[in-house]
Length: 206
Image (tube, rainbow, N blue to C red; front, top):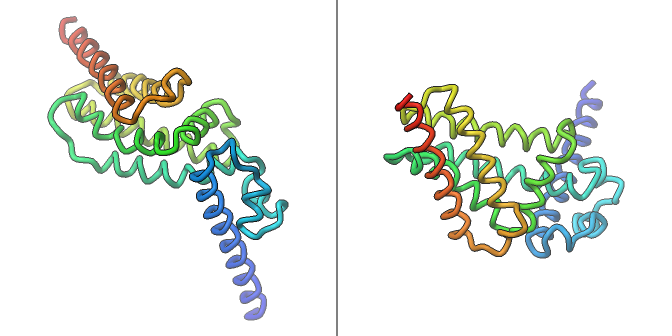
């Protein structure tokens, strides 16, 4: 039994080591060249694994990108959720969004491709499912910030979905691809600012 447990332990360590090498190689190469400038074979070569081994962890280049970006996206979402809560609805929302937008725009091509794949890819694929769960966590965080500023819960949920849609379009649309991070953040802020006061004022007036 002890020998069997040792064997299982070695296999699991070997799997973890291969996954770590693949993740590190993919992260480095995507950062250096962008997703369009990298092949799965090149990642496998740098990770020193067979291409078939790489496909055990990610069946396509898109899935490999999602696997890598999920880690960065998760960190950004957590930073946003933990951000201080300033005064004002727009400021409260932007505090949550800023780390996420910075993450997506760190390497523009990778960020755009990542979000596109999450929205239009197979939602049951494990890596995409994880990414969609992170997106849901972000949306819920925005809704909580809005509730904290006095927006009714049912309205906050809808507005949070609108806000995340604004982020998606502003960070992925080709027409905005050449914008700087500051320009993207300013555009998102202006759209959020235009959306929230109008909606809440209309509800109050009604």
